[in-house]
Image 1: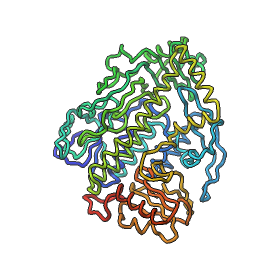
Image 2 (image 1 turned 30 degrees about the horizontal axis):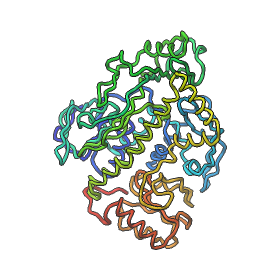
Image 3 (image 1 turned 60 degrees about the horizontal axis):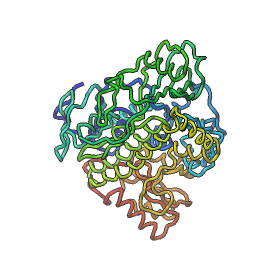
Length: 538
């Protein structure tokens, strides 16, 4: 793959995983020119995340990808072969959704019982429309997103590795194995061993690993020697299932020091050596205490640790980081993929706005400010799970206490809400309880949801006033803000950012409401009636 050394694009994204693809799509929707560079010549076949959380599923829904995600979940449920069906649920607007799986997840290997969850909880009930699109593995998600960016005309250039970068103040010169690229902005979405982060000299502080894990699907000669579900021992833990051949192993004792290429470095490093059948079998035998025999790997296996680090800054000049390039941790609780997609959604419209010229560069400061606290929480959430998984007696005792709490309705509901992401909130100005939260399932009288109107990638304004007060005010931001009118109800008005976060909401139509809306529009959508460099969102 050759790249024209004189090519000049607004943004270059490094990494064609889910985070890089989501970011590229959001930038394309904002009207900027963007390309994706990927080191691998072909998409990775390694097993990674097995599901997505509510904010990620809702992000797909806002861009018209929910039906495709729901199709993936149906295929996954058929592949697994068993699941707990949920009761039919009559939705506002006449839409009836039948027999969908209630996804719960696990905490430190302790699977959360869907039957114990209070599904009527206000936070869970407000985000139920994507229940049928949660079991979307990373590989299938990448395929879905690849089609999305292709339809948007974004070039994904594979087999191209970044080797150098220079921030010139007004752009970035990027050295690659295919030549030099001139780009306005560079975003590293290139994983935990991010080359972009290392070349940008961004520190990556955190805690060192104390375990080595493996994830694979294998042909097993004697699967009866393995127990279903999670099993702990003094050597570590393993899980067999839920589908035949799927195994996860966890061994404490640090990073795999006997594999030089697998060593993790705090500021980047070489790719891990491939996992061999012998390595996987040896680890499984150690933690299971059996002589189980593996005969073949189905696809590439994955090796991972609980290395937990967060970039000292998500931005250095015109170089930014997102996803694992900005934070790494163990995969327990399934937060990593979702955290990265949230980064991409948050950054995409903001960087697009800066490039388009209708927002000041200072808007990018809110990216680090908004996403860093959530990243820090995820690191601690995964560290806590490691604390109850060790093979020592103290951790075993703690695990019993946590298991007891998770056997209660309140305990299980709390954990499911945290894992699902429905309680995520950004600290934004405003007193309304929706402000700073991801927009809930706001059903309209025509049977659609507010989010269904966000396929173009811009701001959404719901106006339920009887005289269209809010829509008239927002008309000065036409092209960036799409108005959606509905019959009078509360909330009377809601302004949703392109990343799904509620920037303003009101239950009234008084002067305070209109003043608050105008302040939110100016603060997030820029000055009215701009003359942008590129076609505006809408």
